Length: 94
Image (tube, rainbow, N blue to C red; front, side, top):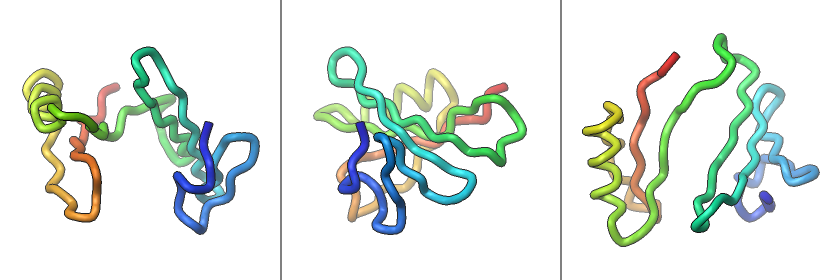
């Protein structure tokens, strides 16, 4: 479920889906062990699906990010002082 508090003020939320713009929609799914997955529809993609980035929350977030970088070739995203999480960019896998 996505709420208006989780999206930019310019986005609308209809039926638990955020409408960011005419080509992008965002939804969240909550999985086992409270893993939150963000699903983004981008109609401009030229492939059926693509992994873009990963957010890491928790006590070992930097360790998790380093593991993803080592294991999957993710790139470190510079820290954002205004953010509560660290993230890594993922390579465009086919």
